Amino acid sequence: MTTIKYQRQSTISGAFVKGSDLAGIKKAILISEATTQPSQFLDKNGNAKTQDIAKVRFEGLDEVYNISLNKATLNGLIEAFGDDSKDWVEQPLSVETEKMRVGGVARVGIYLIPQGFEKIDNADGFAEIVKKGLEKRLNQPEDDIPVIDDSEEGDSMPEDNG
Image 1: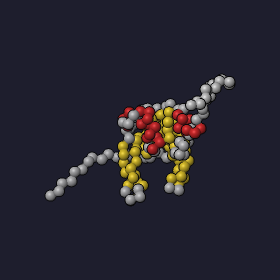
Image 2 (image 1 turned 45 degrees about the horizontal axis):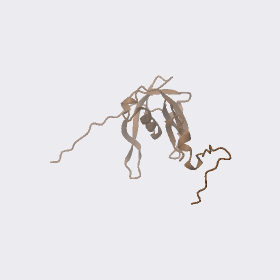
Image 3 (image 1 turned 45 degrees about the vertical axis):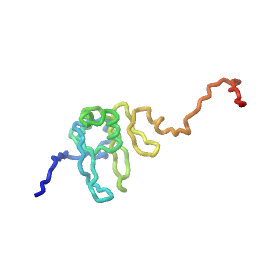
């Protein structure tokens, strides 16, 4: 007889926040660690995609909501606080929303941004959350880096006649 081993699974229950409900909301904190759960969306092979969910409290709202953390938010949180989501809890975050199309449907995306970070569009047009001031370095093609000539007029390099 074959035995089946099961792993305990945890899910976060409750209402998900809608970006369209966050008009004027500028600050938030995560109040739980993030957990990976199956999504309602399927990949190209028909398997459920996963999503990273955490509980969030928005300044000015009484209710605690679930939020699916997008890739830009996840990468920003990892950059700011490390890869253990327990270290993300209770950290002050700015809230930024953006109208977008997902699968052809109009949605409002939510970005949670650590202090000292900002949301930019990288050179490929994807949203990224980076340390403030990093945008110029990320988006400046190497060909456009200025070369500074600090030699005084009249100075010349000896020619190599050799």
